[in-house]
Amino acid sequence: MSYGKHLKYRKEGTIGIITLDDSKGFNLVGLDFLYELEEIQKEISKDHELGGIMIHAAGENFSAGIDLKFLKEASSPFVMENLVWLQNLYSFWQQLPIPVVAAINGLCYGSGTELILGCDIRIAAEDARFAIPEVRFGLAPDMGGTTRLTHLVGMGQAKRLIMGCEEINAEEALRIGLVEILVPNEDLLERALKLTQKMAACPPVGMRFAKKGINLANESTVESGLLFEQAQSTFCCGTEDLHEAVSAFLEKRKPVFKGR
Image 1 (cartoon, one colour):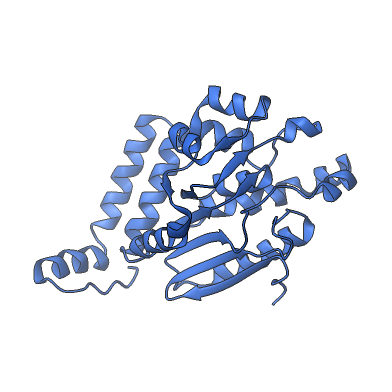
Image 2: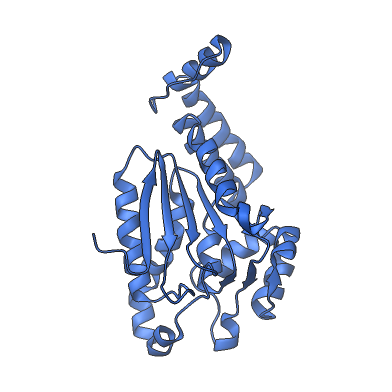
């Protein structure tokens, strides 16, 4: 195991729980953080029993963003050689066939914001604050910020946050669609875990196609989305899990899904 200094990972039933756990309390994103994240993702990819992932922070802040020491040492050749790898680390959550929920408290800046943009659902505590201020340091967001934020909140709000370097609180993040749920601080982890568990209890094939279909709809035409719905419905209606779900509902018992 080559993680544990910046990130911790454990399983609770079928839920994988990633904890940002920097002892200094800011969870700055540097190379060591990213290497640990990659190792956890490799472990997740091999675990076919997982039904969902929850990401949260142990301290008072989710992440204050990029470690400026790392940014200061970065060069164009380094970026040219590594940026696709870096982008893939955050794209991993969007491509993962199971739901990913982010529970956000305190500061969520820059690369921390880009991390949650790849997740499926974002739940914010009342003390959460968001900013994506890369322009202030002479560059634009490069790990999905300009792309996913624009898809999520629209062009105008994305320009305000990125070009204006404005910080917003949790209530405004909810209003513009940056987060989906807002809860009191003391309820954050319970709400995030319960939602992740609820989704993980659904038939895996149905959840996989639902996530793929929504992602596709966000990036394609209506016609393309409808074509995907035709294909997934044809497939899903032939699965054992669909028939098990219907039978269990009619028989008033707990279903047992096999992922096929």
